[in-house]
Image (cartoon, rainbow over all chains, first blue to last red; front, top):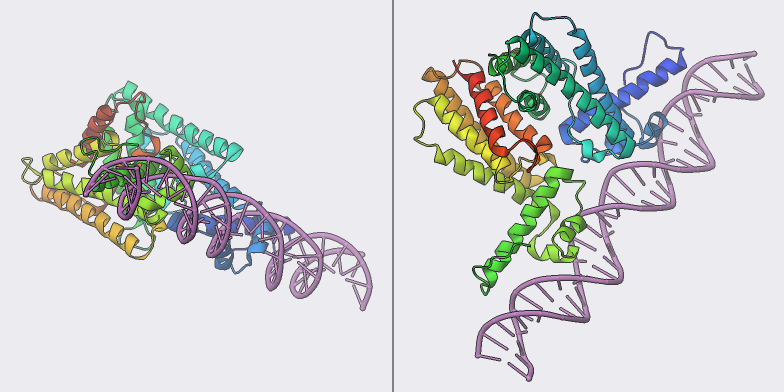
Length: 199
Length: 199
DNA sequence: CTAGAGGTTGACTTTCAGGTCGAATAAGTT
DNA sequence: AACTTATTCGACCTGAAAGTCAACCTCTAG
């Protein structure tokens, strides 16, 4: 388990670090086996803890799933922010953003989980809102590209969902340390995406 | 429930038709809510049956999921077969095949379920084998296109997974009867895919 | 009309994973 | 050392959903 060695005596930091470790570890298991095929006991064991200890850091399994989603969308929001003002036109901006997204999935070990339906009420509403926000941000860039002539005119929603789907599918087949490096995949994805949408 | 009205007195046909209805209905529910969020009671109710009656047509819930997968891969195999000898080059062949795949998802209500991990032993092995077979068939076409110059040279696996991901993601956001017609989506997907991979 | 196969059911059992709790241990403070 | 707070655990509880079963309708053939 990753503890914060910089602040060994700061209890709050320790707690936060361990909580994060729980969520990251669970995220990996969810990605590999799926949410419902991953028991709390398994998550606990992979961290060398008992199931009961998990509940010291987390309120419920559903909360873990929620945090997994939020973590990814938080990182994606950052990526969106980081391309503000970058790129000469819509297409260039989109390439930067899509490359950043791909890097999140391959380099940072984050995963876009599809299991939104296992969340209820407020949790689900929030996650769907975050996902919608990202989709709109991407769509806006695509629309900008259609206006400035760098992206071929078409239905923006379909255009966006096409290449965002590829990102989601990454979770299923990409394995770190395999024949295909994350960088290679990211580059290929950016290339294939951009050629597909360019004018 | 859809019964075979052509052969009202053929019991075996009735049985087969009803069994199919169970699987199709379940497939829809699985697509919308996910496998684990769909109970047998719910599947039964949506057909106007009790849960116990379901087990007259099906051995287990897992078997239903298995049949759902097999149904899709069966249809995809057909699609692969139907493009044999068609198309002047690899790219054209790929466009035909991909269009057929998209039509399966949008027109025929089939869905590529991601939940392979909920299957165990033989079931899972078989489904993974079928999926692998499809992937190889598509990859072979792409490689052919790279040889004949119609498709840009790149790593075939990454190329294939990119646009196959889009197909999988369709399940999540496409809703029949929505603003976007199935045909429109299929056409857009074929276009975006082919431009993305063409030389 | 009725026998028996086809089809359906309510009520039951079983299993398993999420979640709780009070006790036990470790770590930090005085 | 004594006391307090942070962690952890074994054992237990619980509910939901899969799966079973014996009895009960309902056809159709003869």
